[in-house]
Amino acid sequence: MLNRVIATVEKYGLLEKGDSVIVALSGGADSTALLSIFISLKEKYNLSIYAAHINHNIRGDEAKRDENFCKILCKKFNTELFIKSVDVPTLAKQQKISEELCGRNVRYAFFEELSQKLCAKIATAHTASDNAETLIFNIARGASLTGLSAIPPKRGNIIRPLIELSRGDIERYCEENNLEYVTDSTNLADDYTRNYIRHNIIPCLKKLNPSFERTALGLSENAGESADFIKKCAEKAVHDCKGDFGYDCKKLLSLDSAVLKEMLFILLKNNCNISPERKTILLLCEIIRNGGSVELSKQCTAVSKQGILRFVCPKNSPDFNEIPLKNNMTFSYDGKIYTVNEITEKVTNQNNLVSKKRLGENPVFRTRRAGDRFTYPDRMVTKPLRKVFNEQKIPSEMRDRLLLLAVSNTVLWCEKLGVSLQGKADDTEKTEKLLINIDKEG
Figure (cartoon, helix red, strand yellow):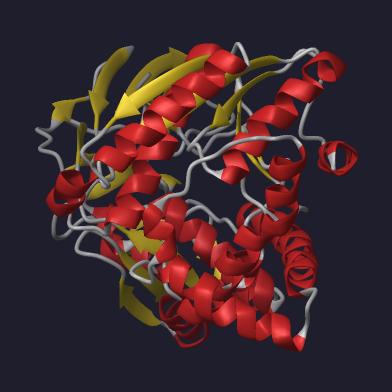
């Protein structure tokens, strides 16, 4: 069986020479076998091996028994053991989640903490049997393609060298190598969803196909490869469809449906920190086609308007008292640094270049007001600033936050729009001009 584990390690690139590895050790058959196997692989890969055990305090004396067993086992294998005790039942009640989920969160937080401290990979003892159970669980909940991937052999710094072995393989290995292990009594009851699947559903599927665990692993591998490909396409689409004020709906609708849905999932994670349900993704697809809005949370709304999809997280506009224009000035506002410098040389981008000669009396920086008017510098057409914002598809939630340079109600320059006809510098002017720059703070 050791050769099968080595084949899995090589197939998925789970180990490199000189790696440090933390074995997640419960004391059960799977994790006991995993630690034993790593001890056997130690010389081949020049490994530094550690073990980590969590006492969830769910099973009283039995949990303490498991902890003591892990201490004895690690002493036998001359392996440093890290132990953490957490009152999972109490914590689960406080967080209003199941003990099963709470225990998982606690375990992985502890493993990650050790991983950072020891610069080590985390090895868990998940098998093909665990993968099959997870696959069924995900299907029952309504799995995406990623859900069909179930338990991948590798995710970040977590590796699963036993993923191509069944629980039966593990038990035979323990028997052949005279490895003792403990049995978690909660695994024998159907109180937990995974146990119910293990005891009632998997046996029925194995009657249909005795190799169900192996075929489930193949399905998960194929689904994972497809999901990875679609994700790469979606990540590229995030960049390709991005515009100044959001995402181009025409470009979004030109995407393959699977890529669009994955892209929307990525956008919601990045913009709103939301892991959306399928119905939310379908609603977003609908407003991309027909316009409208979808409330994603109390803090975030998706809006599709004027052919642009954007995510609106309302913020109160910061107070800004008007500032008289001065030569060579610098000020900050709304997380940005604004600088105004006198220049005489020519610049390539004249959008933020204002003529000193045409400034008029008392020009000030301020936010918009009713009655503001803007004249397009090339078309020489004057319109209310609000109409110009509409024409240029400036998002409504952004408009009150933009700074402009104005004399009375005449806009000389406006952030996102650039210079107006009244503020535009003539290329033939030999007098000084003012260049307005905007940078993010920090």
